[in-house]
Picture 1: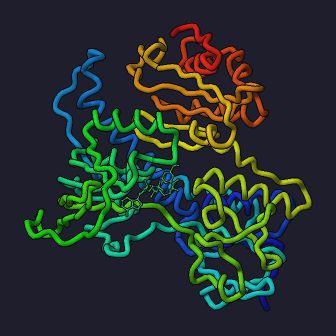
Picture 2: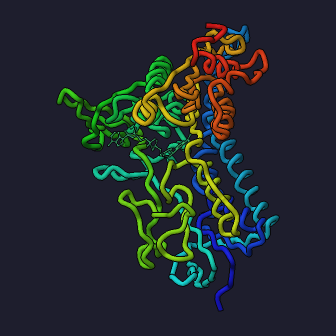
Picture 3: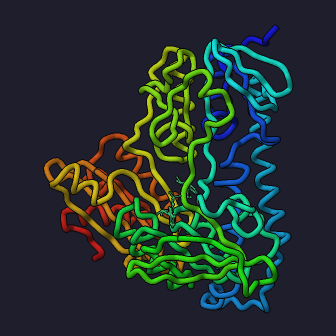
Amino acid sequence: MAEQFDVCVVGAGPAGYVCAIRAAQLGFKVCLVEKRGALGGTCLNVGCIPSKAMLESSHHYLEAQEGLAKHGVEVGQVKLDLGVMLARKDSVVKQLTGGIGMLMKKNKVTVKNAWGTLKGNGVVALDDGSQLSATHIVVAAGSVPVELPFAKFDHEVVIDSTDALGLEKVPERMVVIGAGVIGLEMGSVWKRLGSEVTVVDVATRPVAIMDEDLSREAQKLFEKQGLKFLLEAKVKKIRNSELGIGNSGAVVEVELPNGFSKELEGDKVLVAVGRKPATKGMGLEEIGVALDERGFIKVDAHYATNVPGVYAIGDCAPGPMLAHKGEEEGVALAEVLAGQAGHVNYAAIPWVVYTHPEIAGVGMTEAEARAKVGDYKVGKFKFVANGRALAADASEGFVKVIARKDNDELLGVHMIGHNVSEMVAEAVAVMEFKGSAEDLARIVHAHPTMTEAVKEAALAVDGRAIHS
Ligand code: NAI
């Protein structure tokens, strides 16, 4: 007889495992089904966490080479031990994924290390031959990298983001297709470690969905670091290298806006052209769960699909593919199932690109404010006028605040600079409370801190920044 649960969550990424914990806290009998050997999904195993470990380590490597001397710190010859760097990354991942396992035990969530297939009527079949049944089934299956139709991943030369986290040798030349979040983060890692990196994108600027000012500044700063960009360039073909870098190179053929073509050679080609919802092979089509035109599972405001008792959250449901968006949906859904008022404010979801400098934002870009609101005002403040930034040798970048003209409500806050991933939180908090630029400007900020630039940018909205 099938084991019975109140809630069965399929997929143990940030959306799924958080939903399982919250549901258990609320008194449900919960099962979490996950095929991967470790819990935590893409984010903990092959995404957010290992990439941040590599970004941090490669930044230290570069700092030792180029950054310390101006502080009067002399180092001898700096040497890279990539094996140690990769092992450190793996141990961070192991510690965190192990921690999720402990959380499951603590919250009495039953974990099934198996592939789950939805069979309808609350039944989930596991690939170990067993079945379980649940009143509520939560699909939190995540997403997978998009493949170029003409160049499938061979995971040797044409690689995805997972492969790019574990290269055992620094490639001499790397071509990155896609100047999005993954392209910039992983391109930065390998550039710092010694690769010659060229980033190709069809768009006119990197991470084209972010505020244009940030995009332009980011490109300028990354070019200064030695990353090469080839924009408005359409990749037509990837073929084996005839010249050969070893036997493993590839040639990327791109078409430029003027109609000319160009060939780029790399011993690794990282394809980072987006991710798509993972919805295949788990019975969704068979039981009639509807997908939208982009392949996301269609849900209502309470994450319910068209099939009663089946819900979807995280990357496989509509919205930005961000771990924290999935986590919040996991909490909200568990609370809705318990009869509470679970809710996610999609207007105040921050995003971050963990390059150096970092890029972060929340709310509308200036283009969105122009299109949706019309009358808006903008305040900007550069880190070069911030004392802490200068002391920390972190004077690149700026903060940009956008507010409504009529009532001063904050519409968006965007920033590029050292550690802005942490600084964006205060903007999110003020926006969550529907605050104004004036509210942000009136908050007392410790001196000297880089957060003073946020206050100054908020003051600049009405032309009264103090230090510019
Ligand atoms: P992305 O959507 O950020 O960027 C993809 C880029 O590829 C776009 O700039 C697009 O113009 C370009 N592109 C698409 N097709 C192309 C083609 N045929 N030739 C050349 N360029 C092409 O996707 P990415 O970087 O793969 O990331 C996937 C998802 O993972 C994103 O939704 C992102 O939010 C998430 N992610 C978030 C991170 C973070 O929050 N720090 C880190 C890594 C990923």
